[in-house]
Length: 248
Image (cartoon, rainbow, N blue to C red; front, side, top):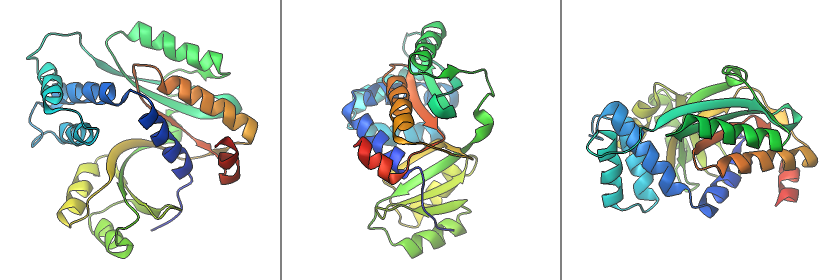
């Protein structure tokens, strides 16, 4: 059940990028608003809102800011509607890329995403053009000091799909999309405190990149992630460790 994560190097690089950019608050304010609009303002009965709340608090967002975002979602505050939109396309080297956005102006967002693809040697595709290359999964992450055997046993009992041990000793538990919250709650009840938990798009196939192509693909991903309306960017790029070391 346990294995090696080919995507860990890209994930860890993305975490560094996220920390460097000032997008975290904007990202979680939008997620809080949309989650509250779709499922109500009570995190006890709205798992998506609870997850967003945990993320916002983890980013040191004030309770005041959180409450305003939730109030906007349930209609207690004026403001333009925010909608979720997805974009798909191919980057350099034929890398498949999925872009998740939240926006109050779909024309602005579409133009910005298209510009990024074009400028970096990619092509924005139509709906479904690359989505079939990804599966929507739950990913629950644990620090390296967790008891691996006990966690694997608890994950299996909770009907997790897979458990992956990364090179740094950290562990990712993967779940079905529908089973994410149940597995997360079961592991929490068993005494395992996650360092992170989120819904992700995992590629079913990979495109192994050389240094030149990796530089181009990462430039495109960085440009997309820098857009204000972009929440998440996923790709099926696999960057070998030696290439990642050269990238720095």
